[in-house]
Length: 215
Ligand SMILES: [Fe+2]
Image (cartoon, rainbow, N blue to C red; front, side):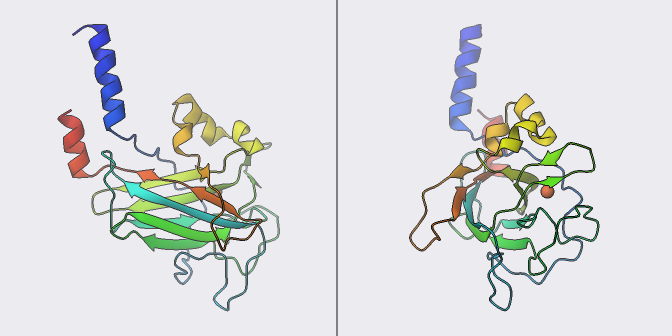
């Protein structure tokens, strides 16, 4: 096989298969005491009070390497509040914690493989390494009957993205585009100040692995 043939086959494979969403450490702020499941809406308290901050709508599809949707995937979301605080006892950030914010939601995909959450945009926060601030981001854990993925999603256009150590690794591996959400136009009913993002998640299934091996 010539170099041209190898390159052609590589391009064909890339066209036919989706690249899996890069994984990330679960991090220290995964909820130790999970709040009562608030489902897809992290933007309001149980009593119906709106959490302060920029409204955030995030949606996406869970798919396998062949682009086939995955139903029954549990999509778990957790993130910091609009002050950069997690409702976690080990959070060292001295910023004020919004006492109403639970920062955790769960959505199980249906036959269309889609998930959707409403929340409030998290702020950046300092790490224990002097000078390193994490840019605003969302943590996801996706569990299917075959696999589990833990990752982080980043907001497009954030200045701190260029200085983040975790994103730097994704850039080095040329996979940063797969952990950055895309901004969408607002839908009817969304607040004018809202942010509407889409973030599709790709992880393997036995079917897609077999297809990949047989390519
Ligand atoms: Fe975080």
